[in-house]
Image 1 (cartoon, rainbow, N blue to C red):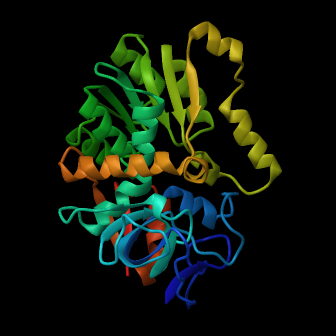
Image 2 (tube, rainbow, N blue to C red; image 1 turned 180 degrees about the horizontal axis):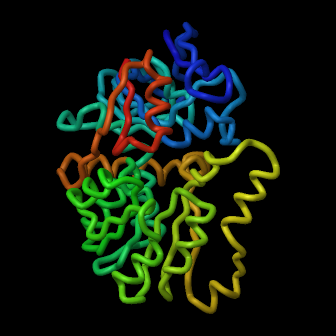
Length: 340
C-alpha cells in the first residue's frame, strides 16, 4: 500500500515522501479500513515543524482521522462488519491507504454523510463537542467567544453553540473570513488584525464579560482572553498555534509559557472561574469510551442535519505539501481534506 511519510522537519515542500509500505493486518478487537479520505489538522503542521512532542519519531505517518470502508475485522470484533462505511480516529497513521485501528474509535457512517464530512467530524467536531458540551457545559443565553472561528474547529464550535442558543463572538484574521463568519452564525465577528478583540468585545458588551472562551492559539491570546472572563466563566484551551511564529528550542518554549501569563488557584477561586485543557489524544488513550460516544454523537447530529461540516478545500494525496502550505498560510476556511 501507499502511505505518506514525514521524512524531515521544516517547510512542507520536501518534507513528505509517498512510499510503498506493508499493508497492516487487524489484530484482536481491531479493524482494517480502506481509506478514501483523511483530514488535515493544525497539529499536523506543528508535527511537521517539529513542534509537536506527541508525534512519533521520523520517518513517520501523520494523520488523526480517516473515512472509508472496513475491509477486514479482527478477532472479537462483533459490532463492525466488512463493507461498512466508517470514520475513525487514528492517533497518527492516517496518511495511508489502509489503517488498522481499535474498534472503540471507529463509528459507522450513514450514507447521507460523504467521506469528506465524515473525516471532518472525527477530530474537529469531536474536539468541539467534548469541549463545549462536556467540559464547558454551554447553555442557552451564554455569551461565547471563539478564537480562529473560521477554521474547522471554530466552525464546529459555532454550530454547536448556535444549537444551544448562545450569543457568539468570533475572531478571524481577514475581512473575507469576517464576512464568512457573519454568514455562518457568528453574531459578532471581529478582525483581530484591525482591532483589539478585548476592546471590541468590551465595547459590544458594555464592559459585561464572556461566559465561555475557546482558545486554540494560546500565549498572548490566552492571556488577553482571561481579561474578558465573567465570574463563573470558563476558558477552554486546546492548542498553542502561537508556536508557529517561533523557532524550536528551550528559550522559545519558555517565552510561549511566559506569554500565557501567571495563573494562581487563589485567583480562580476569588473569581469563580475555570481553565480547562482539552487534548483529544489523551482522551483517546485513557478514555476511549468517551471518544467513541462523542464521535457517535456528532455523526448522529450530522445525519439529522443539526450540524454540517464546511469543507473548505480538498487535495489529492500527491499534493500533501501544497495542502500543508495552504493550512499553514492561515488563509483556509473550514476543513481541508485529502483524497486517495
